[in-house]
Amino acid sequence: MRLSFLNRENEFRRLKRAITAPQGSFCCLYGRRRCGKSRLLRQLLPEGRSVYYVGDRREAGLQRTALAEAVGLLLPGFDDVAYPDWLALLKRWWNEAPPGGVLSLDEFPYLVDVSPELPSLLQKLVDENAEKPLHLILSGSSQRMMQGLVLDESEPLYGRAREIIHVRPLGAAWLQRAFGTDSADELVADYAVWGGIPRYWELATDFGALWDAVESLVFDPLGVLHQEPGRLLNDDMRDTVQASSILAVVGRGCHRLSEIAGRLGKPATSLTRPIRRLLQLGLLRRDVPFGHSPESSKSTVYSIADPFLMFWFRFVDPNRSRLGAGALDSVTQEVQKVFPIHKGAVWEQLVRTAIPRLALGEMIWGPASRWWGPGIDHRPMEIDVVAESEDRRSLLVGEVKLSVSSTDIPRIETDLVNKARRLPFLGTSVSILPFVFSVNQDPHVPAGNRAVTAEQVLSALT
Image (cartoon, rainbow, N blue to C red; front, side, top):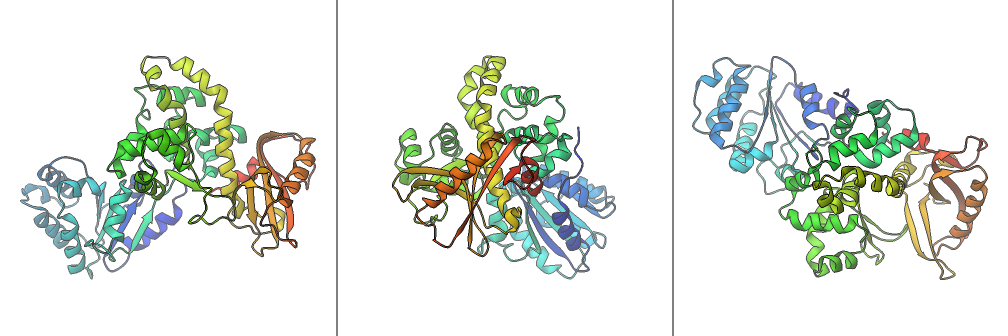
């Protein structure tokens, strides 16, 4: 099933403005694979004046022939010539393309792999033809290479892009349109597996139930997504073995640098660079207690940022041998028993992400995070959600649960206030606002209670 075009209005509008400008433009589009870059381009490109070509890993000569054939659909006879190099082909495009013509080279990093001279050639042609109403769009899934091409001062194309657009995963609010269900519990469960990747959602909609989709797409060694983490890492990591190993041990519960290094049998200093790269790619997340500086805190913990990768490294990676032996049913049953723990962790992060977009207590809140550590009485404690109001006069503290009853809420709120009063950084004039966030909430919770529903949270995550 093909999903409708979801939530790329801003990206679409910016690119549309660039390729309809009276002067030439160069745009760069990048982001993780399966986030919808190619769909966006196909939706955007105007018929009758655009060429769309997807690069691959073939030899340069074969790719020039394929690109010439794609141009030939717009400019008859263009592919009648054997082009000896990229300059000859591209120069002819800039000379003969119709006014407003758009050349879109998707998966551009593959082309650069076989033809490293391409960025310099394109820089020269873009500069020479800046006044012509011709447009160039480069896109790719290798975030490392695409960012380098346009953001690295030493690269030829640096400073020339009119638009540099990072296509990110979709917010959880779009799940309802994708899966057509109003059940918040089901939507959170779906997001806990597929994350915000539109193509995963599209694949999953072909199945009647979540676990049927998981078993066929992810657990089955023949499934389309069974080897997905390896493909993601291949796009952006030189040492995929080390990166995969880090994600594997984090997925199995090692969250501190010392624990990760110990499990891998390596000095912590050797992991600094791959961890930094995983953080830059948005595959790992670094957390410190609320109010701590990320640069100086000694309480840093790491977790897998992407729900799908978190699910895969938690449940697929440890069971690959059993899955390869055909034990899909038994693995599925075992995973279903502990899935609520994983779902709860993803739900917590959704809540924290949503806080600045929720006018809770009729206030505007800053970024939310967890807090853990010893209180002023030196006893350890944890708070799921902590955020400060914009005026810094109020502190939001929250507990995140999958289910809650109306009778539990007053007790939870009291506990939260008592915990907040033990926070070592709490000022004497700060007011404390406790909230309870739950996926499945007792329908008898009275109006005005500080109990926040999953519907409220999900609606904020566009």
